[in-house]
Image (cartoon, rainbow, N blue to C red; front, top):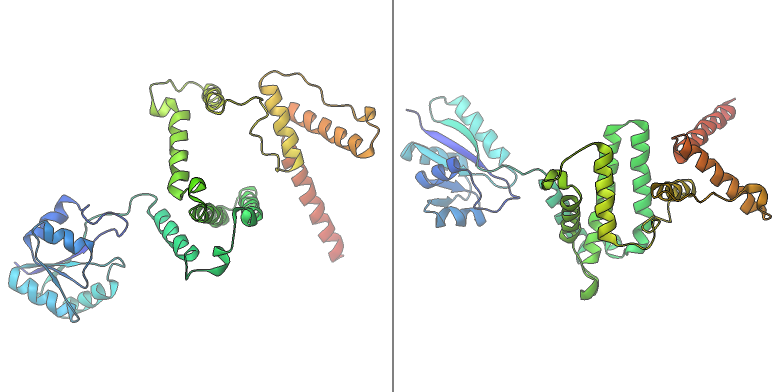
Length: 323
């Protein structure tokens, strides 16, 4: 039976001792070689494995260990040690019969593992010795960037460009992670972290989706939305149905949201009549509000409608310029 070399690859984003049963069997039964000490080498030794750190000539050391013991294990580093794997593959291709090469995954990255990388990279950038620009920012100085990135993501959705959307959502995520990192520098009584952000999100999703995480019946989409709003009202204990509306959103969207909230609880408050206004700006505003109300009655999004018309007009202006 030919000698066997096992390249054992593990996720650097999981605790060192989280290996599959098959991986633990291999590292306990056979000699393990590695390029450098790590938490994983410590865990393997504690579990009874034999680990040797190889300083150079790893390929030959592996071949010698496999020839002597039948099986040798290489504990790959965080980058996977691709150069070693390539060198081994070429050597075994030139000299068939020396050993068989096997790739084994001892652990895999869980879904969302790269989010940990995003947090680690931002911590490096916003820490002493990192990026001076990011270290100089505040929540207020970044506010405009957060809006801009959200609008760019909206543009990608409107264009149906899912590749651009992936990139733009990454920019939105950058803002979230940077805000969370900056919050770690606040005075102790105001301080919070990205884990606090994620924790509040998880708790909210569990509370507001009892049809998934508890014994509530799913029902129709309308019933699910009504349940969400009922739970939200109980959590927030607000004085008005209008509390919580983002007042800094574009005016058409703001007007539509206010009308929608008022209609949700059956409040029949008619908007002001344009002709009753003396001030020209107030008259214009009342007319626009009436237009938004009419759009809502027709099931149309006034913000999207005006955006569409404005973009079409922009195209016409560009066409005229070319002429």
